[in-house]
Length: 245
Image (cartoon, rainbow, N blue to C red):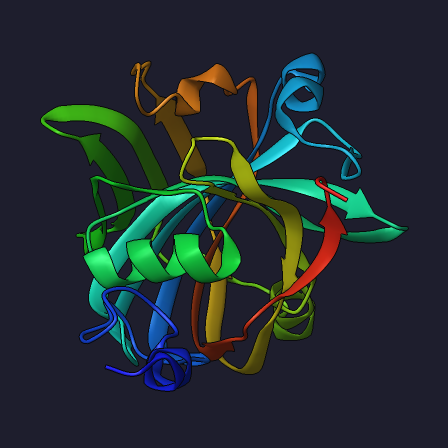
């Protein structure tokens, strides 16, 4: 293969059979259980990287079911998003994500910098309860429950929350182990077709695990919960801060 052919063809690894196709990526019937809880402010400040700023002691614990996504397939995801501000704009910083499908793990980490690891999340309705779980190996890491569709949420406000900016810390090492890329990436969800949004009573329990330390941000009080169903597009991102310059 000629050098010019490598440059033309290369966009992801492996060169001749990339783990994921070129984006952006469309999700159909994407389903969320988001439980917002109050936690320790000092612990939040210790893990959120500057120049992002923690504005309040809140964490959004998310369970996301994605049965139909272009290029990524059928999978489930779970993790923590921290409300932050950047240059006066409010949005979310993704602290950790765990999922059960290789293409979005590879693509999420390589393209945007999503902090994704392999695990076993689930989201399902069981009789009158919406249940989200996360297992790392055989051990439970998180269990969230919400009364199933007790009350409708305001759709305009829910859609606006999905349209807010999101930030990630992208790290790619050099061959000597030093950071070759270390930057804050901003991305958005777009073309959102909100099919429904509900709330109800909710609880969240987090378990300590050495390799899935979600309980390091302890649940002090559950503030709210939402169950969302939507079609949407995950847009590609842009670099808004480079730590190595």
